[in-house]
Image (cartoon, rainbow, N blue to C red; front, side, top):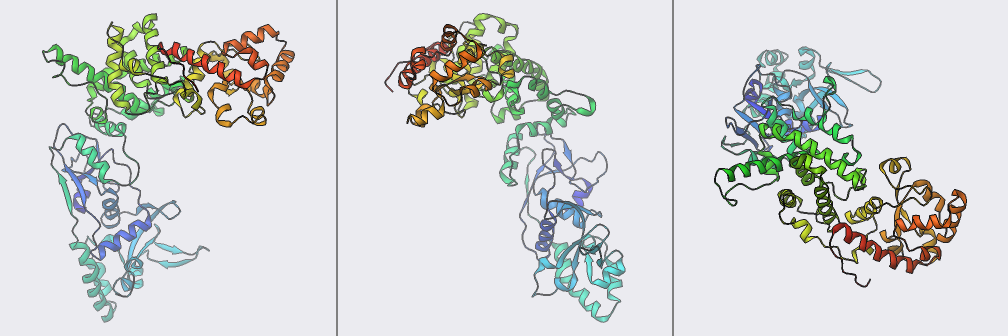
Length: 582
């Protein structure tokens, strides 16, 4: 096993994360092997399948000949084999970390006396020393020195790095020290060294015919190190086999002054949270759609042709040719999506009801191209978008919905029937009362809808354009202030509803404070020189019943605004909402 690692016959697929075991882990592992305790099986994949190609790299510490192609890829057991190889067979000091997670370099030794004493804990026999092989106390004084073979033998510590190599010269010198040393060496060799050299590790080998999806799934199932691999990491390793650097394409390469796709998207604040997987899902939607259309054109029926999808297994089947074919269009699709969102007055990622809804939107815009400038197309996209938001249809099972919405949107633009998202969307009136925080997509939707439809700031009279949004720090705030509501005994679950909230600038909200509406309106009018009629006009842009607000009549205001908001939501969805009792 160690020889195969050194020669490069066993290597890692490049999606494997780096070696991370600590000094304590390594010593414990060595002790287990020295006692013939099982350390678990390792799992390998036999190479040679042209459809399962990854960029490969040697295990850390191994330096096989350049261009050496492995016979096996290590899927499970990296930490154990790398630890054993570095300590036993690399011939180099081991780069590891101490208990405080500080990077350290260590050589490993076996205290021969402790190792052969059945009453002692075997883990105590394994010691690690710094790179200069000198152990020092906190004052910097050398308390143990193993820097020469003579000093090692005198201290009775055997270098772990000699276990699998030619140790006879070291042993002969040790035996010559005395008759006692000769007997002790015999006992040590039999109870420790021979157990190491005879130790066997169970190996599960996957045949080279194992498909890529299964390889990736198996890898994630058997690795319990914590974070699951993303499809981006897996595709990065796959594309690297064809010398394409997906990571650089996404993140950019500062050394080469190359701007990545992520940086281009993040130029638009609304796209700040778009993930690499989101982008790959949109690319896969385009790719699977084209493959489906080609099959239909070749004579296959709709049912016989492969489906449009962007599930994990479909992304993993994405070829580099397909990625390069559609990545540019998808990038433009996301940029068009950012402009669309700006028209809906959604300016930052924080305000997006669903980040995931961008995926079918960007894919559709990538196909539609210049047609997206058509007003009829924009209106249909807006209806679909708001139905998704207020129908709260992107909260779960999103991949299935992506695959439905994408082709149905395109068909709708060409005169087909409306997508299921439009047809299925339904907003229950009582849901409005329950919207209290940004955790809800519909809550964010109400906030954006008010800005889109021209809500003007109470103090400045400015509508929430993108410039005003950022310059004035516009956010959602209470209309009847929280402090006032609490004094009136209005329950929090009522006054915290989005019905009692609206987009206002930070400065305006500070001026409102905790006063009654009648007081803060009078104050704003006086300080900002706003005529009463103009203030009423501003309040109407927020669909606020003016007389109720000026009269500090919370219940009347609440009922009227609830009805008005429901009407506004119905208008955005272009679907009726049945008014029901609270």
